[in-house]
Image (cartoon, rainbow, N blue to C red; front, side, top):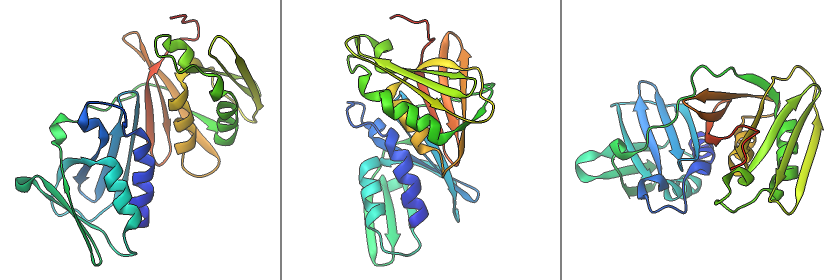
Length: 240
C-alpha cells in the first residue's frame, strides 16, 4: 500500500486538471511480468514509474487519476489487489475490508508518452538544482501567448547552476554553487515542468538530466526511480 501510494503521488503531478480531454485526467496502469507500470501526462509534462507486483495477466487500463490517488491514500495497511474487469469497464481495488470500483478509459486512447533517446544524461546535484529553480520560478510569466516567458532559463557553468526567469516586468536570477563536473547545457524549460523535474528525483543527492534535440524540438528528461519528461523546451536564444 505504501509503495503504491508513493508512486501514485509522484505520477499524479502530471495529471491534467484543466483540460477538456478527459483521458488526460487519468493515470495509465500497465501490468507486465512482475511489474506494474504507472504513467500520466498533461501533454507538456510526462511522468512514469513502476513497482514490483504479482501479475496474473498482462494488460493496460486508464483510471481517474485524482480519485485513484485519494483512494490509495485512504487504504488500510495491507496488500492491495487491482483487478481490471474489461467486459464491465471497471477496475476493482481491494485492500483488507476496503473495496472500490472505478470506471475506466481505454488505454488505446492514452497519448503515446515521449521517448528521449540518444540524449546524454548528466548527474546533477538535486538540491542545487531545486534551490536555483525555486528562487526564480515566481518571476516566470503565466501568459501563454508568450510561451518563451513562461519558462526558466537554465544554464550550467563551471562550479555553478544559473537559473533566470522574467515576465518582462521583473527579472530573477539565481546562481547556485555546486561541486563536481557539470554538463554544458543551456535551455529554456517550462517553469512548472522544471520544478517537477527537480522535485520528483528520488531521495537526496544527484539526479540525471539531459536535453534531447530532434526534428527541431527539444525535450528535457530526468531519471531516478521515476522518469520525467518535458516536451516544450526551447533554445536559449528563442524570442517567441
